[in-house]
Image (tube, rainbow, N blue to C red):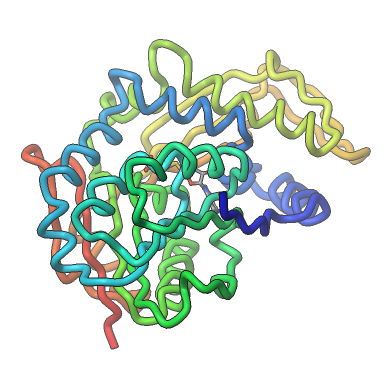
Length: 315
Ligand SMILES: C[S@@+](CC[C@H](N)C(=O)[O-])C[C@H]1O[C@@H](n2cnc3c(N)ncnc32)[C@H](O)[C@@H]1O
């Protein structure tokens, strides 16, 4: 399997941890959640009855793929944060792109995802790029990308992991990476707090395990000594920010060491693991405009619970 590995170096991860631990509240980049185990747990979250986003978006893609393909036109599909690449199938079938390029931070998961996808689309050449797409200045040169229009795909409401300023910067970055090509952006809409809090704190405890795995990952990869049992998981809707905040809350006063540096946690202090910002179509249009895109079309499910926006470069 074709895979280019541009994963951030351990030294860069250490630096990001130092910066994140110095923030108020403490927060690490959401991609830290996705080591091999985190990616496996995320797939399990997608199967939970409370988490309807994945099933709804896949059904919408299946229903609308032919129309979306016509609007996207020909070229190479570039998917950001592809994960298990379970959503791109209908687009590959309808569009028959020149190639499929999948970006993700989790190298082993990406390799497995492409190996599983390739047999169903034998005529579509595939390439994986393991990277932090929020820091990528250019797609690495590759024959599959040469001279091709780039068709961006960013489903799963993953943009919601970023605060507003970061989201604008990421969409600007994608505009640059796609070199004038369009972006199909999947965004979840605001919903009643109870429904969202249940979606991100499922009864089976998979979301909580996914968050706690971050601490295990820090222990394994960055020489930390977190005791995950001393943190409880919380997901709560913050209406002022139109987002669900997911956090691990320290159960007691405690000290944690990361690569030899000590950090105090007071009882009740949060370590934010990720946000999930929810965008109404109007909010999405305003965000896109600020980042130099315009919403050229929108597809949504019957309940209008999420959207696939077709963004085109504004100039
Ligand atoms: C919420 S999951 C969505 C997965 C899939 N796109 C879907 O819609 O089900 C986010 C995915 O993006 C990847 N990811 C998160 N942050 C990333 C980053 N900064 N750069 C590259 N990949 C990232 C994760 O590894 C994960 O596979």
